[in-house]
Amino acid sequence: MNNHFSFLGGHEGPWQVTHCETLIGPPLADVTRISVVNGPAHSLGNKATWTLQGFTSNVRYAERHEIELLRAKQEGLGRQASVCAALIPIKKNPQWWAMAQDERRAIFEAQSHHTEIGLAYLPQIARQLHHSRDLGEPFDFLTWFEFAPEHTPAFNELLAHLRRSKEWEYVEREIDIRLIKPL
Amino acid sequence: MNNHFSFLGGHEGPWQVTHCETLIGPPLADVTRISVVNGPAHSLGNKATWTLQGFTSNVRYAERHEIELLRAKQEGLGRQASVCAALIPIKKNPQWWAMAQDERRAIFEAQSHHTEIGLAYLPQIARQLHHSRDLGEPFDFLTWFEFAPEHTPAFNELLAHLRRSKEWEYVEREIDIRLIKPL
Image 1 (cartoon, chains in turn blue, purple):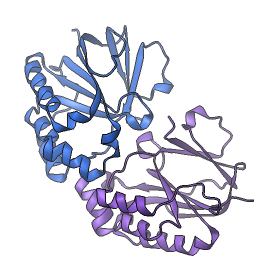
Image 2 (cartoon, one colour; image 1 turned 180 degrees about the horizontal axis):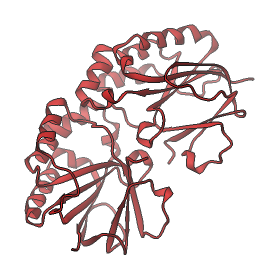
Image 3 (tube, helix red, strand yellow; image 1 turned 135 degrees about the vertical axis):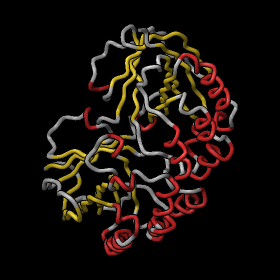
Image 4 (tube, helix red, strand yellow; image 1 turned 180 degrees about the vertical axis):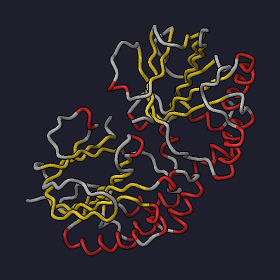
């Protein structure tokens, strides 16, 4: 299952936690390091303080013209200069999930400009979305971001835009974990 | 993870296989009975000949007006008269999954009338869709249908409609397993 990723929070691993802020809902236990492992959690040992898992998948909202714009600008994870990362687990409320596809799409893009906001910060801010809700996880999405230290203000601005959006009214839990990869 | 279901093919279980037809792609090993278990496969023992698993999830294409029509007509699984069932695992090709949301929706409904066809056979044919692709499974979807014996011709007609649709040009593996629940 190579589309599955587990995020192990604990006291070892390549990513060092520099800051952890709970924006809404219950916090996660404090950890000092995070490892990202390509595999489902049940296949791993259990030394971590917490484990969050999700899978990458096909696009759920992006239309063809948006995919083309994203592809033209985005860069992948693992760039050498990207020594800053963020793991942002979020959970949306039952009202969000009860909506039809057209209702969610309208809030996601027409009202909240989610793709458009993300596009404005490419290629500086690279990201990967992982879906968790269908695995019975405590969060619905785990988004992993990577960027160079000088783009931290841009990243904060990107988050501020999204958090002011209509879509974010449906977020009932969000934690913002910032990380650096020590040289 | 109570949205996860495992379908265990073997020689025990409440559902007796009456017919198994491979429509496209490689077959599954022959089995005489199927059990449906509410839980992920890795938590179960391994006596089955094969195990297929999937999760129920939020709607991926249905718009508000379609959801209202479906809700007004559909009935749930487990009706006493529904002693016939079908398990139809399908896999779509990479071209399907590379499409944007608007492209998939256009083929699914505008060109193939998937929801409209299903609606025409409600409430006689009850169904539950399980998503498998994101679990790294051999199939993308496992659809489970239940109906009374006298509605078997209607069910065959429903399948014939779908299999003639544009959407089915993207199906690269499909197996049609028919079952009865012995009294």
